[in-house]
Length: 290
Image (cartoon, rainbow, N blue to C red; front, side, top):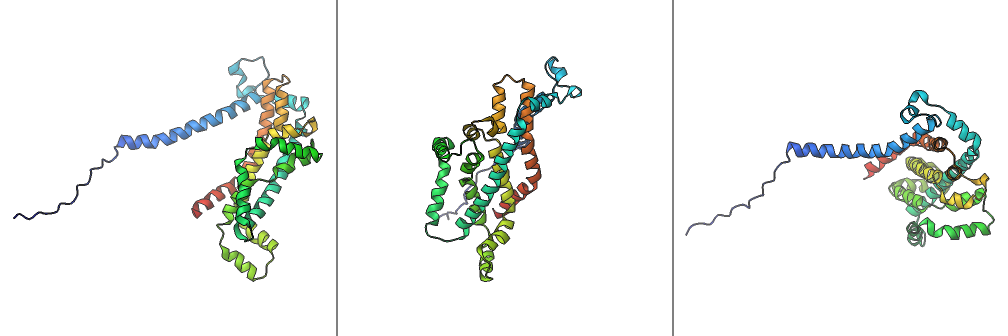
């Protein structure tokens, strides 16, 4: 009888990607990124060009010639509107909110991450559930509460309702959970009080995350439109976003509107430029932890 030999299974032949496929794959991502960059930059560039372009009376190509650029649109919009007052309101609204949100979020995140107390998980998930509720759903109840406190058309009504930020608390809690427990145990053994542990251990370690979160919170409040529109019922409490919207309804020339929009963008660029290093550090730290 012939002996039956077991033959190894035949493996399917996998064709190696051709040079053309590899080249197409490499070109697709840069092309998509380039198109995304163009779509993002073109509106911003158009805004700046129109803001510096001379007033009406020139043809389109000649008006966008850098040699003809002027600051006349900026001077006119600053003199004919209350932009300085709106800028002060926006800065107060944004900076005070950033400081308070970072303080409250870091304290709450530290408590939820490293402290054990009854109902911690239930309280955290209940607090986190507010992320599922859109702001428009709580707009009317928030306004009624602010009106009963007589805070309408005031900085209290503008700032205080925006200080409870569940997303900021969640981000801080997730980051602080990555910190080793040995640091806090050693501090407790040495007899360090809670406020010293928080200020000397937690805050220095979460500085990149605080800077990153500060950028986003600043941009959220600086670009906020709906809540300042509802609360700021008089011109003295209007922010830049609301003020520019009112200018649009006053038949202001497009050059001056774009000049006002350019002024609005400058603080955001400054904040991002100053804190960019901390933003990259935060991304690098999150990558190392992953």
